[in-house]
Image (tube, rainbow, N blue to C red; front, side):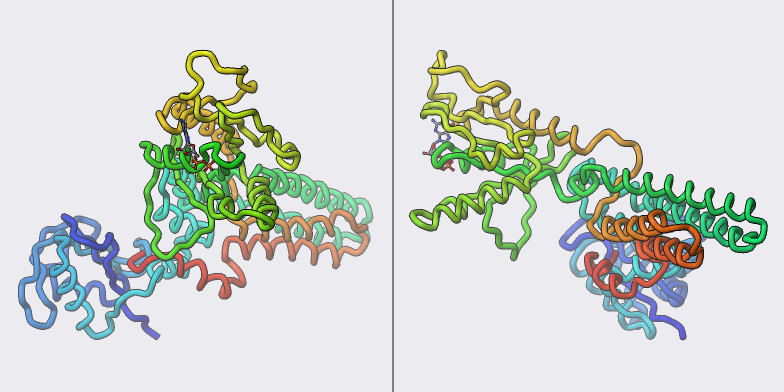
Amino acid sequence: MTRDTIFALSSGHGRAGVAVIRISGGMARTVLERMAPPLPKPRFAAFRHVRHALTGERLDQALVLWLPGPNSETGEDMAELHVHGSRAVIQDTLASLGGIDGCRLAAPGEFARRAFEAGKLDLTGVEGLADLIEAETSAQRRQALQQAEGALRHLYDGWRQQLTAAAALLAAAIDFSDESDVGSDAARRARDEVEALQRTIRSHLDDGHRGEIVRQGFQVVLAGPPNAGKSSLLNALARRDAAIVSDEPGTTRDVIEVKLDIGGLPVVVSDTAGIREVTGKVEQEGIRRTLGRAKEADLVLWVTDGAAPAVAPPAMLSECADRVLMVVNKVDLLGSRPPRPLPAGAAAVSALTGSGLDALTRSIGSIAAARTGGAEAPPLTQARHRQHLESCCAALDSFLSSPLDDIELRAEDLRRAALALGRLTGSIDVEEVLGEIFSRFCIGK
Ligand code: GDP
């Protein structure tokens, strides 16, 4: 069965100098021959007049690329039209493409899906590509690029091969069970290798969530007594160069958030304003929720009013004392001689005048960098990865904690462990997650 040829605007929407329209599938060559003849040399840009496929009307002049499969992103024949980025040029070019038999507009993520199906990308690579398109800071870009280029695939495929090798040793142990020396030696070696592999996987899992933090942002929560200036501080941070203003229409939040880019790391600062407004009896519940949020945060800024009597953080927060940074606000009211010394390590700021905010931002940045930096190996970046790696480890636990005598059962443990890694990279059993992963893309990716 031949598949439809798909096309889409792959560059952003709205007026622009250039717009890129991509085409993938068996008709890509015919499309170019009809709309922008003659066919350019493969993988070289050529300047062409673009014509309407049915009426022959000249639509634009464009750079055109012919990217024959299988050495293309989707593995299929592909073409690109780099037309002028006006609404009319884009609309008429897409209308012309839609009028060609066998061509249709791509669904969201359909190019990436075809690349996955052609084996050009594994699932972690697809996720990396989606993250690269969403990346807002340099650290996110670096991590996503590494993943899109196959760093995690390489790691997980390597582990799967080690499991296959251990399974082969077990098979040898069965084959040579008559010669007990050879057999038990092979079984022992299998056990040693599985033990070493499990240690490697555990240390990959036990990474302080650094990949997930880079992907989702280092979460900072503002907490402190009423009127200490938390909202003012959040507003002051939002007006700074580091603030990333990204409008996401339709999202409702019970907290107010500011996204910052501190030295390339994404940092999300949130004020628990929605919760704070409750009074009276409900206040207890409000405080409980605020503290609950604070406990989940990567860092809590305990904000107090420098001109008011000191307020220590509640006992509940002292459980995560290593994740609390004291901030004394309103230092503009203190004059040159503060009434009392600031707590050690506290940041002295004024949300009103902006004094001390640079140093506070730097402190947050270095705490976030310490939490996310260090290791060279590519980190896992999503809960999905964690879940499959945990089930891989559980199967290896069963292998290691049971007697090796029952070799058939132990071989089954190894098969289950390998299956978990296969699900992770998408080489097995993935139909149910595909829809979810590809729908994260926009049309044209
Ligand atoms: P929140 O309840 O902790 O969110 O506090 P707000 O941000 O609503 O601030 C409480 C009051 O303190 C407001 O009247 C602010 O204008 C004032 N305020 C906040 N930050 C400063 C500051 O740095 N200096 C001075 N002088 N006043 C401040």
